[in-house]
Amino acid sequence: MTKRTSLSLPPGLSITEWRHLGRQMFVISDSSAWWLGDWLIYGETYYPDRYKRAVLETSLDYQTLRNYAWVARKFTLSRRRDKLSFQHHAEVAGLPEGEQDIWLTRAEQGGWSRNELRRRIKSGRHEAGSVEKGSLIKMNILSERKERWQRAAESVERDLLDWIVETLDAAALAAVEDQVDADAAGL
Image (tube, rainbow, N blue to C red; front, side, top):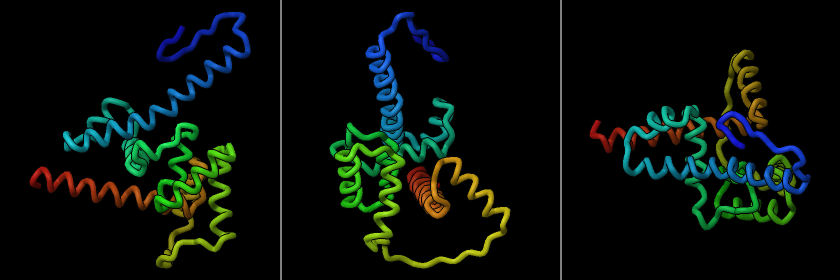
């Protein structure tokens, strides 16, 4: 029997039934991130204040919802891999589409966990010298700020530099989308 805050299992449940139930619950949990992302993308078309409404409806924080929508937007339905988790997709979402597909295929064929995918991407970029060409940005920051950022990155199991880039990308996307919403509302 299930309730919102509990799962009661009958005595004598076989290991096969128990494992099957666990897989089913994982699929529902993992699917909900995709569903929420797609729900937000739909809302973008019809409701200018979708994130305010979404935060109220789901009790999830704004950034979590933004991340779900960002990942969902990066992968058309045909490019989403059923055998991989939403988190696998989130790991490669910031890469160019071709690289996303390469890494997801490798993860799928190798049966990699999300953490293994992350590790392989990181080592693969350094080994292959495939670090993207870009601009070098230097920042001088207070040690307290760096420590706070480091704790935040570690709390989501990210490398500090990856966390900084992802956070800045999310903030930039939010700013651009907010401006598009404001323009659409005639503000």
